[in-house]
Each structure stands twice: as structure tokens, then as C-alpha cells.
Length: 232
Image (cartoon, rainbow, N blue to C red; front, side, top):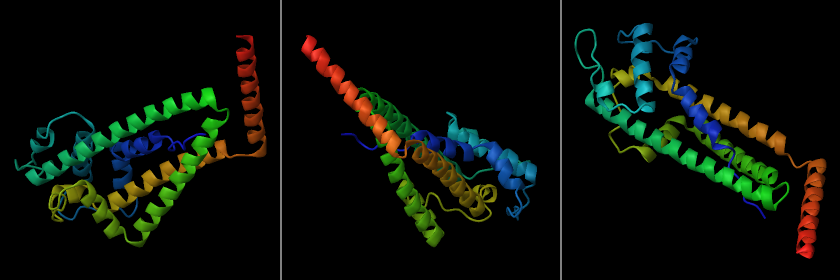
């Protein structure tokens, strides 16, 4: 008996971290078709201010890290509502990374248990977990493709209080991170997780040779246990 293991939580965690970096931001701002800022931010402005915003959600700095930033004219760069939303994002990401770490620890412990009691159990559990992950990706992809606006709204409503995550088109957060950024981020995260899931499926696919090796190893382990009991 074994439980399906979630496809390693590390890829999802790594994918989220990857899109929350200045490198991904640079690729987004320089890719063809990415919308320019209509209200005056230059490319250098966006890279500078956007990097501060992404750094904030991954570091341990207080809200003043963003709230203290000012424009060349001396005006606050981010509104208090924008700083508050980024603080909420920081909390959600911190919680998600903690949960991912706990799941990773549990997965390792489960693998240790399976390795000791069920030959081939790790492979079968990882395969089952990858299948479930693939189904989840398919469902989320369909929902996002069919109604992206609704999907985006519902995801935000799940994690943030009403009225705390909507802004005007001329607010700094919208100017730095327009809708195209979030669409591309979602696609990138999905592709990374999908690639890791497919790789897991390939490496753990229950071929006849793998099943036979698992059965032989299980039989050998049971024979050793019987011999040990007889000898005791």
C-alpha cells in the first residue's frame, strides 16, 4: 500500500520564484509586444521600480521598503494602498513557501518509509502524484483559457480582501505590472510545473520491466525478512 506523492513541490516553488525576479522582469519588458507605459515611465524606470517591488515580496524588509520610495519630483512612488497590497502578497507567498517546505519534508519522509517497506513504492507513488498534478494543471488551464478575467479575479478574491487589490490604470503597480505580465507569469509557472510533471511521468512510467524489477525486489526483501525471523 502506498499514498500518491505530490509531484515534487519544488518545481512550483521554483517557478514562482523565477517569475518574481528582475531577470524575468527584464525579459518581459524587452519582449516584443509587451505594452509600454502610457504615463511616462521609461524602460529604466520600470526596471528600477519593478525590481524594488519584486525584491520586496521575497525579502524580510518592512513595508517602508516600498513606502519610502519617491519619484524624482519627491512624490511617493507607491500609494499606501499599493504598499498594503504588496505586503499582503508578501504574506501569501511566505505562507505558500512554508507549505511547500512542509510538503517537501513530508514527501521525503514518505519516500523513506516506502523505500523500507515497499519495493517500487516510491516510483508508483510519484507516478500517481504526477498524474494527479497533470489533471490539476489541465483543469486550471481550461478555466484560465476559457475565462481569464474571471479566473484572475477569483484567484485574487481567494487570497485578498475585497477592495485591496484593485487599482487605477495610472497607479504605479498597474504601470509596472500590466495584465500581460500576469498572463505571461501564469504561462511560465504552468510550463515549468508541466515540464517537471512530464519528466516525473517518464521516469516513473510503470513499464513491464520496472514492474518486474519491483516484484523481484519485493520478493527478495520478504525472503530476507523470513530468513531473519527463522534465524531469531
